Amino acid sequence: CTPVTSQTVTLNVDAAITIAIQPVSQTECEGENVVFSVNASANGVPLTYKWRKDGVDISPLENLSTLSLNGITTTDAGNYDVVITGQAGFNCASTTSAVASLAVDTEGTITQTGDSDQEVCVGTSITDIVYTIGGSATGIVLSLDNLPAGITSSINAGVLTISGTPTET
Image 1: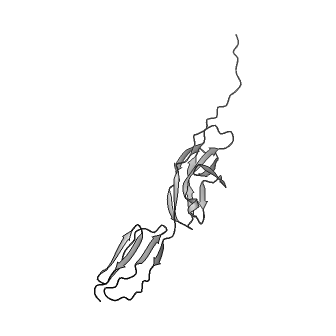
Image 2: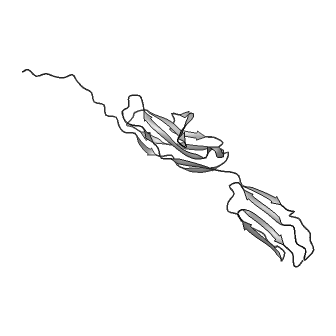
């Protein structure tokens, strides 16, 4: 029998999509700008990027390896990732980045109730002065110098209270 030769066949082996740099979790204050980025490759194959927040596609912010959020608010807080795919005809599966969380702090606040300028006689109780710390304020530092004898201060769950009865002038 005479040999038979088949037609030439081309085998295309696509490289898997690899992520060299994952998005990084961040904590920022309200009003700041945030950028998440990813560095991925598939041996030169063009890639597309679809960013997600809490597993839901963000539209129209897609097809970029970076996601920029400007003037963030507390509604921007969440978990972000990106689904990366190759061009049409690319045979390797898409891949998803690691999740990067965004925490959004609000500006610290201090509200006061009670008159901070009181004049009372010895033995007469002052009207409590209460400072309530709110927002994302942390690390309360109490600096109350020279409180009169009998006047005390306490902090409990972000509330500073000054109260008591002066015992001397």
